[in-house]
Image (cartoon, rainbow, N blue to C red; front, side, top):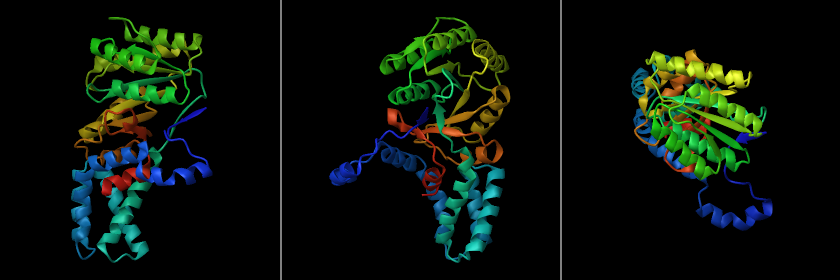
Length: 327
C-alpha cells in the first residue's frame, strides 16, 4: 500500500546529527514548495493581515475582515462561518489585541479546511483506476504527468490512458510524460475516449499494473454533450472493472475563484468526485475558494500545485495552507 507523498527520506539519528549543518542550509522540496505557496498567496495574505494592524477589536475590524475574506474568494457561506467561529474563539480566549486575532483566524481556517486533508492511498485495488477530469487550461494533463512521476517514484507501476482524443496535443503531451517517466501509455489517434479507457483498464489488469490513470478531455460543465461523454467513460470503465474508477479526480485552477466551486459542483453531480487537485496557486491565486469548497462540498484536496517543476505538486495540509493564506 502506498500513501503519497513526502519526497525526502527520513535520515537515521546518526545521519541527522552528521548532516545537520548542511541540511539547515539546504531546504527540502517541501520547504521550497511552501515558500512558493506563501509567495503565491502573498497578495491575499497581506490584505487579510492588514485588518489586524489596528488598536482595538470592534465591529469595524470584523467588517474589514469580512470584506477581505470575500475578496479572497472565500464565498459568503464560508465567510459567515469563519466570522462566527472567530468571534467565539476571541471571546473564549479573552483576546484584547487585534494581532492575536490573526492567530485565532488561522486556527479557524485550519479547522474549516481539515475535512479536505486526505492522502491518496494506492494499493487497496490492483489496478487502481484513477479518472481525471477538468476544464481546458486547468493544468490537467501536466498534473497527471507529475502524479505519474511521484507514483512511479514510490514504486507503483503506472499505465496511462490518453482518453483526451479530441485534442491531438493532449495525446502528444501525455506521451511525453509517459516517456519521461518510463511508463506505458494506451493511445488511439481519433479513437473513442470510452474505448481507449476500456482498453487501458483491461491492459492494466492483464499486465498487473498498480495504477491506471485515465486522462479525459477538458471541457466546461456547461458543455452538456461533453459531460455526457465523461459519464459514458465512467460507465465503460466499469464494464472493464466493476469496482472502478476507484478515484475520480477534478483538476481546478486556483486562479478562477468562485468558478472553481461551480466546476466542483457540476463535475461532482455528473461523476461523483472523490478528490481534487488545485493548480496554479503560485500565480494571482486568492486561495480562499478552498474555504468555500470546504463549507459547501468538502471534497478532499489530494494535491495542490504551485509551479511547473515535478516537486511543485505536493499533498494538501490544512494548517500549512491556512498559515500561507494569512501570512
